[in-house]
Image (cartoon, rainbow over all chains, first blue to last red; front, side, top):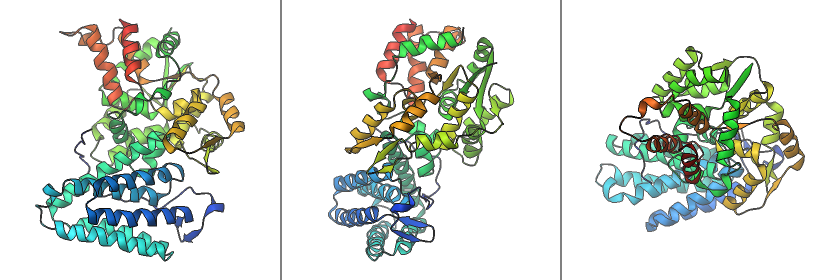
Length: 222
Length: 223
């Protein structure tokens, strides 16, 4: 499915709030909450993502992004969601390296990408959740420093990655409203995106025969 | 008084297809009121007005509210218990999955409160929770490849609360408009079949949860 051009160019940043049950919280630093299971998983994903970028393994990058979607759908922690978006965006950006590589600042961007992920991973390994949070923010802020043209392209990729990940979370059974809330996208945007996927064609969606529903509606309007 | 409560998703499908014009005559045929809760109004208007994307659609919905095509329900709606039950219905590894937002549940709670003739929702998850929660469990398990457990006590309580709720979608509203001849003005150089196909596909690709098979089945039914 082709991507649409976004009219909105705001950079992604997700609020650091979770709905995690308190009995399960392992690390709390101020507002920042991360469960041990997610911490270990994010370390693994970041580690493999760095290797995948260095090897130019785009398929693995996409796969890693999908792996974090399970946590994003169930635990709904903001870090799993953010990491899923970042890694998916990077897979898309590196897929078009021939195009983006022409722009000023591309090499710096590539270096900052790998370095940013490595630093974030180190912080997590040291149980420094606040430091990890800061690294993720810094990482997203590096985009602002890019050459205008490259920045616009990359911001657009991030925006579309956000919608792609949102549609995946919705596909896992989370409503459009809840998903939009989690990813900070509007319901208009999300419905527009989801409408162009195959989610509505899943056989298990059918609860009532459409003819029966239509006949019921006729009765309502009688 | 007869009422229909609309969720954000159904209004979005209508406005993004430029079909809000059917609401006024449809409401006259229905002889009742089309309600939306305040949280739905916020999602439809206030939020998109802050951005450039879908700002026009927000203005169009705002006009429909101004014209009383939709009435915003301003009294308080208690969603606490229902929201808690729905968001503690499914569990993975012993942890509940929050599957719905407050605004979505508010529309449903309003339909229950007003004993509405119908609750219009284009969104798949809400519809499944109301009509077949076990099916949603199956969808989750298929996607997660993990065992999903269900809180049967809450499931039965929800079932009891929604037992009189009739779920429709923008699809059914548009087809009613079609049957009433409200869309006949578009039958210029196009057949009825083409118009139906265009209407249903328009709704589908802008986010209404309707399958290809349902589109075909409804087109055959209407012709």
